[in-house]
Length: 125
Image (cartoon, rainbow, N blue to C red; front, side, top):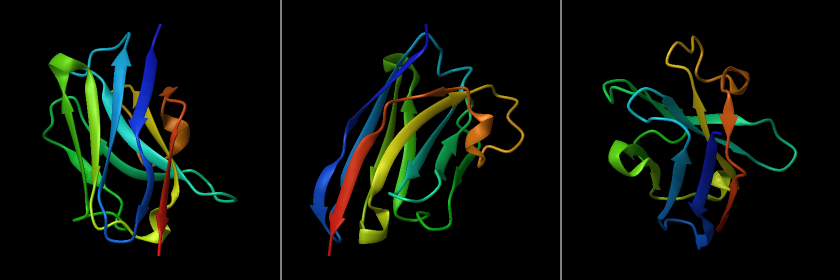
C-alpha cells in the first residue's frame, strides 16, 4: 500500500521560510517520480515542483522558481520542499504526489497516481 504523509507547513509572515516534508511508504524514491502541488481556496490544484527518480531532471513552476527547492532522500523515503521568501500568494494546501516515471505531462494533476492528505500553508502580509 502506497502512503504519502506530509508534515510541516503552518502560518508565517511574508518573506519567511517554511519546509514541507513528505514521508513515503510502499514505493521506492529511486524509481518513482515525485511532485508537489498546491491548491488555494476556490482554485484548481496547480503544479509546484517535480523531481525524477534520477534527480537529474527537476522542474519548477515559474511562480516559485528561485524561491522553492525540491529535494529527496531515497534512503529515508522522504521528499522535501524548502520554501523561501514566501508571499501571501503562496497560501494554499500543499500536496505531495507520486507517479510513474513515464509521466508525459507532470504539470497536470491528473497524471499522478498517489497523493498525500495535504498540509496547509498560510502566508500573512
